[in-house]
Amino acid sequence: MVKLHQLHKIAGLSAGLVILILGVTGFFIDHDKWSFLYTTTFKYIPDTVKKADTKLFEAYWIDPKNTQHYIVGGKRGIYESFDAGQNFDKMTSLQCLGIRSENAEVFAATSDGVYKLVNGEWKQYALGGEYITSISLSKQKIVAVVDKHLLVTLQRENAKTLGETVVAIDASKLEKDIKLSRFVRDLHYGRGLFDGDVSLLINDYAAIVISLLAISGYFIWWLIRNKKKPALTRKLIKWHANMFAIVAIIPLIILAITGVFLDHSKALAGFMKSVSVPHVILPPVYSSLTHDIWSVDYDGEIYRIGNRYGVYSSKDLQTWEEEAKGLAYRMIRKDELLYVSGMGAPNRLYDGKWSILPKTPHMFRDIMFQENELEYFAPCGHCTQSLPILNDATLYSVLLTLHDGTFFAEWWVWINDYAAFALIVLSITGTLRWYRKKRNMSGIISNR
Image (cartoon, rainbow, N blue to C red):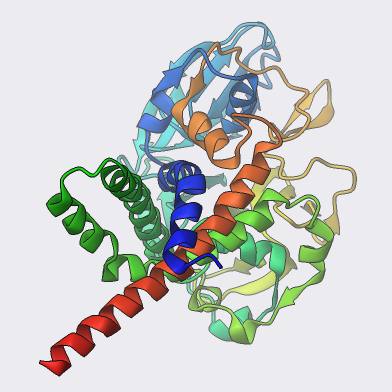
């Protein structure tokens, strides 16, 4: 029978390197706002990385006065074309999360505030230094969302701040069950436990701990095998099995299990969407969602925000009512029509009443009119629009494909699955060994 320490060693040696890759890449992917992830690029990488890089585009705008003039924005920056997308030039390296236009004025939500297009150049308009995740324009106001949390209302004429609002939806209106598919993603991506950055920090802690444990575990094995520096080996073993590692076990097991579900999200889609998680057992974040504003719209009278439950509206920014169910990933207004892109939910249209948008791409990022035909911009799916041709890929896309395994091959997902299983084995055997050691030490002390 395999002893506990042998099982721990087998799991660590066979999967430690993959676990290390998952821990390091997961840490950086969780912090997808960091600019260096997009300004650091690589040329000699697999095609799967370049394909992943096209998903970083967030916005598409065609000049209604010059249909040859395109502007495309994304995490890598903003690009411009004057020949209907045949050639693009880079305008700025700022991350762009959305482009909105109205009455011949064009604004962008960026990683450094709201910018305005002035004489062919992007000029900072308001909220410098803030990470703007969504904006909406009306004739007199601009509503910007700062880091999915704060609604800032600006006077459009002079960029004066009119007010700042933390959206506080009455908890009784959030007493809803949620699909397992959404819950699994929220947990894995660091937004499924507590509001704000707490869930993310828990993921960070787990990622750092498992990365250090993987490195130290290999080093201890090498020292023991080669019978080198016994004093250092004993110190490392004592450091390797510590309370900090024990505390990280629960989030590590959660990440391992949810990671397996996400590895096979297509195959398990039917099951995960058929299972509802009752609100009574959901973590605290689902009763507040103050840091969960994915999109915003303001039509001059009614404010609307999209969160993981659906679309909520308010006339005074104080009392919020649900209008439509399902995560509202993007809200894009074209005159009197409001287009809503769903994430794990149907796409919708509001024209005075809500209706489903049939046969539209899932999670579209933007819409535009070409030759009076409405087109959807969906870089995650089948994209029909011209995009900048880039001969390299960002560090973010390298890390992302390393994390999901597509950097290596499609079948690598099974390697990740094994690493997740090994991580659970390491967590259990490591805890038992730590407990036995503590119990033995307590027995020795008490006998004295």
